[in-house]
Length: 240
Image 1 (cartoon, rainbow, N blue to C red):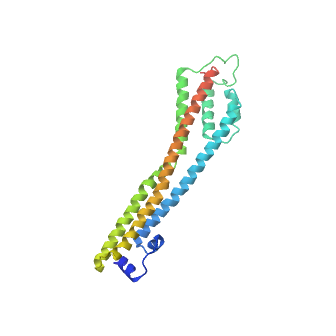
Image 2: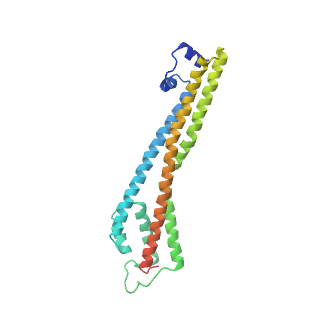
Image 3: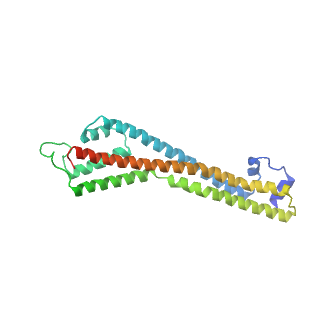
C-alpha cells in the first residue's frame, strides 16, 4: 500500500537514485548491508594487492642479493641485512636448523668439511621447510576467504531484497485494487535495484579472490622451489 501511495501521490522514480531514495525501509536496510560489504571488499582488495606487491619487490631484491654470492654462509650474511620477507624467514630458519644439527658447519674447515647430514636429518630439514612454507602461505592467505564470502553472499542479499520488494509491491496492489502495468512497474523496478547492487558488489570480490588465490599458489610454489635450491646448495657444498 505504501508503494502504491508513493507512486500515485508523488513523482515516479526516474533513475536508480530515485528508486533508492523512495524505496521501502526493508530495501534500504539491504542496500546498507551491501554497501558495508562493498567497502570491506574494496579495502581487502587494496590491502592484499599492496601485500603481494610488497612481497614481489622483496623477492626481486632478495634474489638479486643471492646472485652476488656463491656460498650459503655468504648468502646468509648478505640477505640478513634486507628487510624481513618470506624468503628471508625461510632461509633464516633453515640455516638455524642446520647450524643446530651441525654446529659450526657454516664455517667450513678441514675438520668438518666432510660432515654431512644423515637421511633422517635431511628429512627433518625438509619438514622445517614445509612448516615454514605453510606458515607463510597462511599469513598471505589471511582475509582472502572474506572476498569469497562477500562474492557469494552479496547476490543472495540482493535477491532477498528483490523478493521482499516484489512482495511489498503486490501487497500494495492488492490493498489498492490497482493492477495495471503503471502501478506494478515502478515497484518491481525498485525491488530489482538490490539485485543489481548485489551483483555489483559480488563481481569485483570474486575476480579479486581468484586473482589472489592464483598469486598465493604461485608464491607457495616459489617458496617450495627456493627451499629446494637451499638443499641443492647444501649438496653442492658437501653438507648433505
